[in-house]
Structures are given as structure tokens and as C-alpha cells.
Image (cartoon, rainbow, N blue to C red):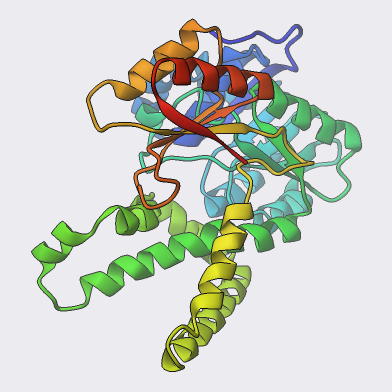
Amino acid sequence: MGEQSEIPLFTKCCIIGLGLMGGSLGMALGRYGVVEERWGYDRDENVMDEARNRDAVDRTGELPEALEAADLVVLALPVRQATEMVRQIAPLLKPGALVTDLGSTKRTLLDAMNHWLPRGVDAVGGHPMAGSEKAGIQAADPLLLENAVYLLTPAAGTPRQAVMTMEKMVQSIKAHPIVLEAEEHDQLVALVSHLPHLLAVALVNTVRHTGEEQELIKLLAGGGFRDTTRIALGNTAVWYDIFSTNSRHLKKALQRFQEELKALWLLLEKEEGAAHMALEEAKAFRRAMPYRGKGMLPEIFQLILALPDVPGIIGKVATLIGDAGLNISEIEVLKNREEEGGSIRLGFSLLEERDQALQVLEDQGFRCWKKG
């Protein structure tokens, strides 16, 4: 179990939709004692049984019962379903309730909240920037949201106190809240989240439609192709919902991308080396992207380790660091050895911990170095 909140923020919550995200949030709320009693509803009774068995919720029930006296209501549904659900539950909400969601687009849902929610019920949209290629309550994990950026988008007229309560909830489950306007949210995530998924799909289909030897292509598709297209494995129904509810901003982002492709096409037609500057500029910008936004989120202090490809080596590293009383905040396997020449990236919340870990690993003969 993790750290418990001194006083629960909410007496009762109702999570509507007990899949990967709803289940993970429910587990985190219980793990950190944010809610006294967690209720859940899903249209699939088997999912509700599994959610109780996995401690994602304490109790389940149909919506009138599950919503009764709930002071936090979480719509953990695809955006279009959540939009319809707002209309259905509006008459069932108690005065003073706080309604949020976990969807990836915001304008459509907040418009529905502004229209349907009764006076005295506050709404703050939520979008944890976390996920998995896996889906369903079986994949739910209380640590899925830990250290994630968690975007919050207040509805029109939402009092500051309600926003502050949501910020505190996010912080209580060890995530990092950032408050945005709904329109700004949708514009930004179109560029950094939705467009990359669309391009991954396009890249996979480009290879699929080549007409070349398919089995050989699959064999030759190395780490670069697999890493670039991994997100195409995501839940297709969820991503169709995202594309359809953010099509305006996504089309603008796609237009920008098409302009960049055209510029690269023209560079390739010029003399040898003409594209070199574009490559260097892209490399420099990508390198400058922090793993945490300085000034907005706590900075992460990083180590890169070059490791031999032998069984148990990552476990050995983690054990050495743990035995030294140090905590790894982030870990990333760097499959592509062309960049950094390393195998894994370790992130630490404190500079002192990073430096101590460096010393511990170097004393054991590991080759590692500080990053950033």
C-alpha cells in the first residue's frame, strides 16, 4: 500500500466505466486513501465483479444507487459515450457534486457539461497523459497514473475551489496537474498525442500496402519501426472516438505535417547534403525536450546505463539501487542503441539520489553517465 491521505478528499465517488483507466484511477484512489467509499458502474456485470475482486472499487451498483450522495463522479468512458452519459446522470447528481472525466478530448464533453449539469454541480475535465496498449479492467494498475502529467480543464463558471480540489486529488495519487482551457488542451494534444497515433497508423499501412515480400518486411522491421509504430496497437474504438471528437484540430496538425513532408521532399531533390540542416534542427529540438517540463513539473535527474544483453541485468541494477535506499522515479528501456549508446534510462526525483546511484553503479563496474 502507498501513503494514505491524512483526511479523505471525498466521502463517496462513483466511477462510471471500469476499464483500464477507470479501474486504474479507482485503485489509485484507494491506494492513497483519497476517497472513503469507492463505487463503480459498468454496463458489463462481469467487469463490475472483476473490478471489486481487483480492489478497483469497494462496491458496484446500477446508476441511481451508485450515484446516490456521490461527491465525486468520474466518467471513465470514451468521449462520445461520456457526453451522452452527462445528460443521463444530470438529474441524479447531488448539489455540490464534482464531475470529472478521463477522456482525451475536452471541448465536446465540456460543452455537454455546461449544458446539462444542474446549478450547484461543478465540472472539471480530466485527462491523465498515461495509458497502455492493453485494455480492460484486467490491465488496470494503481501505478499507471503515478508521475503522469494530468491535464485539468474547468468548465465555464467552475469555482476555483473545485479546481483546487481536483489538483489536490491528482497530487494525492502522485500525478502532476496542469490546468488548461479546453480549446488549448485539444489543440496541443492534437499535435503531441493524436497526430503521432495517426502517423503510426499511416506508417504501418504504408508498409502493409507496398506489395513487397510481407514476411521479409516483418523480419527486417527493427527497433526504429517498432518503436515508431507501437502506439498503433492502441484500442481502435477509443482512438476512433478521439479522432472524431477532435477532427478540427487534428486536421490542422495533419496539414502542418504535410507541409513538413513537402519541404523534406523538395530538400531531397536538391544537391547532396541539402537536408542536413533539417536533420540537425530536428535532432536538436528533440534532444532539448525534457522528460519533465521545467518550471511546471518537478525536474527528473537522469542516468543512462550501457548494459550487456544478459538475463536479469535490469533486476540487478534495480536491486543495487534499492539496497542503497534510493528510489527510481522513472525507468525506460532504450532499445535503439544508436542514440546515447545506452540500454536504459533511470530517472530520480532528487539530484543527490541520482549522484549516489551513479556512484553505486560505477563501484560495481557499470558504465553509466549523467544526462541533462
